[in-house]
Length: 128
Image 1 (cartoon, rainbow, N blue to C red):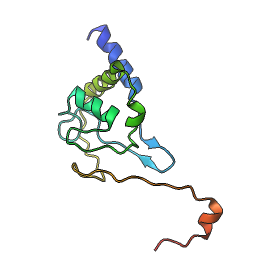
Image 2 (spheres, one colour):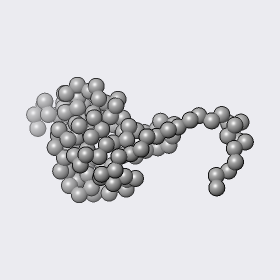
Image 3 (spheres, rainbow, N blue to C red):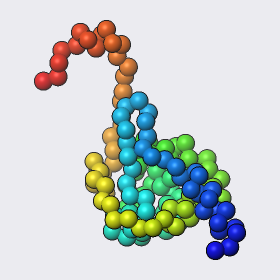
Image 4 (cartoon, rainbow, N blue to C red):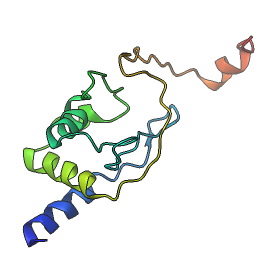
């Protein structure tokens, strides 16, 4: 492997370190990002991986929920986005089907959240 490829993979590894998102509403864990053809990104092109991480678009036209921080990654340089895709493609394939809440043609609904002060929450009736 040439030095340029080694450096690109190291940059991609550094940029891709996402292990679940903690935005105050729970922990969200993404799908299999290894190049496994059945359960991961094995059939995805570099361009499709870049579209997913920068635009929230998957090859099957499913929109990714913004908890996958594609809005934050939309401003990546082309080199950085390509480094992440190269790193993901360099990982050993791992067969790991991650169940998701949406089918391939579903579009996630909008998440609406409110902050309820503790004293107000304590007076709310229990869910039925």
